Length: 456
Image (cartoon, rainbow, N blue to C red):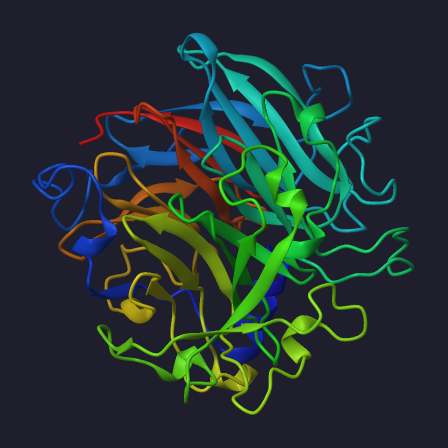
């Protein structure tokens, strides 16, 4: 994901510009009305303090602890910690513990694959998958082990209402491609508490395409899915209607119907530029061939009305009575209808209404973080946390109710030479169930951090 994005940014002339932010901010926030806004101001929690250890820059009063680094031994003895740390979620464990389920976006050439474990391996030639960490109330890692292996390019995903993780393969490679022995491009369910309950079973009815993230409507059980594609035809926004909605662990294996979103008259969401623009006639069209046996889904014929595409559909989350999804960026030079530096869309199922609620764009304050929102989550006390995946310095940044953008963390681990530094993206931002700790991954070198401090 990281290398691909930097390549397209370079091709289209995009740079690590600062952010301007506009849109209907308050509706994205949960918690009390005073939880996030008072006192944050333009600089959030204050300026970032350079880390003397060169790992993670944070505001004064905040602390981090490294929970896991690629190449270190897994505590289970199953091998080494895999690389390319990506999407992640935190779940409540027993006796105040927290269980993290973490993706590894490994392709066929990855030097640090997820170790193959009997009963948890889908394709022996796949190098991606998930690991799980168990952390106690003092931030000590008690266990770290493989939860899923033999998959490919595990990018993001999303938690289920019943406490499991849905991990998404961002690839369309078939058996015989890149050495794989099985088709890839599926969603897998992972039970972090007991991975053998879920095994390594692809949820084939949910489609085979370049999956990015998912979010589940806890009321209806409908699963919303994003597709990350930066070349035309761009990705689609999907919904999956399960045969056993809200059925618990393993219920999604029962099958269901996959549909793609059509906004009549809008073939490309990037053409919409004004926040607050709404469409009240959203349609859902059955996907002709969810397994993409002959043709990738986004290339398929959806009938006379066509289908609605968008470049770089990434983060997806449920809030209130709506699902929100992110278009990380769009570039005319790559075939989009218009340029933007990031959008957040809101779909209200009960109204069948789609609204553009946030637009990111170039600004002038070089102290602010850059473009291309990716993984995204709601902070427990009210606030929005976004992982940056663009060029230049990489940040986790927050957005206040007033639309102010502030840097919360900066990756201090340079991958380049001193005269030409380069930093890996952030991914998998998530909070402990009690809201006291933020967990986040540095994609490369793969590092998982726990961040504590004076959260407002």
